[in-house]
Structure formats: C-alpha cells, structure tokens
Image (cartoon, rainbow, N blue to C red; front, side, top):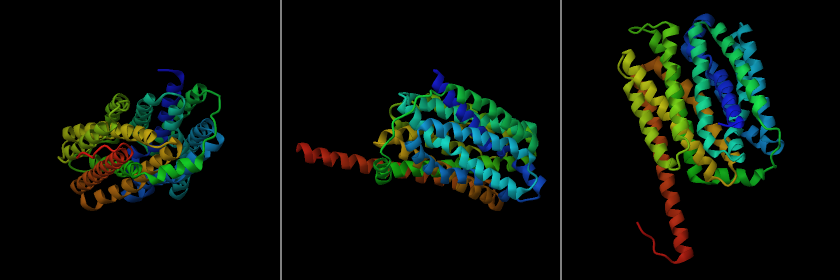
Length: 383
C-alpha cells in the first residue's frame, strides 16, 4: 500500500469516525437532553443530510480549485468542530454544529474516489471504502465503550485529529488539471444506469443507517437490556465489512458483486429478527459485509460509467448521504412506532427496490448498446 492510499484511508478513518460518533450513545443523548429517540437520531440525520446537500457543490468546486484543497479543508474543519461538540449543553446548538460538521465533511466523499482514480489507483477504491468502514467502526466503538455522550464524542474527535495529521502528510502537493464541469454534469444526469446506481446508494444506505440507529435502543430495552459498553460491540461487525469491501471492491464484474452483496445485506437484515444476541450479531456482520461491498462495487461502477467521474461521483455520494439522513431518521421512527419486525420489512423492501432498479437500467442499457451495434454493423439483434 503506497503513501497516497494510506493517506486517503486515514481521511476515511477521520471523516467517518466523526460522522457517526454519536450513534452508539443516542440513548444516553436522549436521556441527557430529555428528548425522544426520533429527535435524538437527528444528531446523525442532520449531519448526513447536510453532507448530502453539500456534496455536489463541493464536487463541482473541486473541478475548479482542485481535489486536494477540498479534501484537506473538509477533514480539518470537521475535526475542529468535533473537538467543540463535548462543550455544548444546548441540543439546538448541538444540531447546528452537527449540520455544519456535515457540510465540512462533504468534501471528502465528494472527491475521494475520483481523486484516487485520477492518480492511477482505481483499485484502491476498495481500500478507501475499507478506511471509511473502519473509521465508522472505531468512532462508534470508542464512543460506545466510553459510555457517555460527551466523553465518547470527545475521544473520537481526538482520534480523528490524529488521523487528519496522517492525511495532511500523505497527499501529494501537485495540482490536477481543471475539468470541463458542464459536460461532466450533463453526462452524470442523463444516463438511466447512473440514476439506478444513485438509487441503490440512497435506498441501501437508508436501510443500513436505519438498522444501526435503532439497534442501540433495541439492545438497551427489554428483554436484552445490555449496557452501552456491551451494546457498542455490535459495531465490531464493521471489521468484517471493511475487509469485504477491500477484497470485493476491486473485482472487475461489479454487476455480479453488486447484486450478490445486496442479497447478502437483505439476508443479514432478516437474520436479526429473533430477540437474541447471537442472531442479532450474525445478522449485523452479514448486512455490514454485504452493504459495504455493494457500496464499493456501485461506487466503482459509477466512476467507469460516466465520461467525467467527478460530478457523477458527487451525485452518487449525495444520494448515499441523503439516504443516511432520510432512511436513518424514518427507520428510527418506524422502530419507535411499530417495532423491529416492521423496520426489517422496510429495510428489505428498500434494498429490493434498489436492486430491481439497477437490473432494469442495466437491461435497458444492454439493449440500447445492441441496437446501436446492429445499426452500425448491420448485424442482426439476438435475444
């Protein structure tokens, strides 16, 4: 693994540790601020929502000022905001700061995959997703094992600051050529296959975050009644997801990987239905491994399906984090109102719709290519 790949993995560690640090301590946050689970989940929802809104503008900005300045500014500002969060005692101010942190964090996922591809490292995208995955795991574990909102989030911010230092040291200082933004954006919004991949990002991430938002409340409630420290161990499932995404993210047949891993994600969701720690743990390992491998395959597919990867990658990232915001918040509300089984049904439905959309778009794309080939060569169409 070279210096650039290490640096980008460190950026993923910092970014995703900061983004999801409050998740394992949402029950403690709800108790401290005397709010409902749905309101507590806004600590995740507003950050991912702001990230989703900002990711496309920052992707376009990187076409003008370069990828490196956007990446570095993004992670540094987010780390500084993270260090201030434990000092906040008003929930409304906390939400404002989390929204600003989400905007700051948007620069990294908006640019990271394209940056690696432009530096001749498309196979490193799997390692990037692994870094993102381990960042989310470490952030959640550190916060959960600490057991309180303030101490946990503060500890994660210190960790992210150290990882940011590695990122700053690792990125090469040479600049990239300016891209033709208008053409790239037009291509990114006119291909049905790309829209289907954006939908997979939205629906898949919505399902994934909904499950992880709600699991803390489920594990803390009867009949399980686990402590925050024990409940946070569910995030060790991220380790499996990180290894899986690094291994499968570089596979050439992304279509087969995507469909297979979406199926594995749905299977993992279903396994969590029994109210017992063992099937819950197994289910989260499966859904985490499946979703992050599917995400790595879909993200790499987006970069190869568009003539200009920057805007398409930005739209994909925007859909991904919009799904985290919308699906995560709605999923937590579904769990609070109707319980775990209904949340499972919703999550599997979202994943199924995403897979169906890609299948239909790919089939249409294949037929269109066959017609063009027949028109140009005179060869007969085959079914």
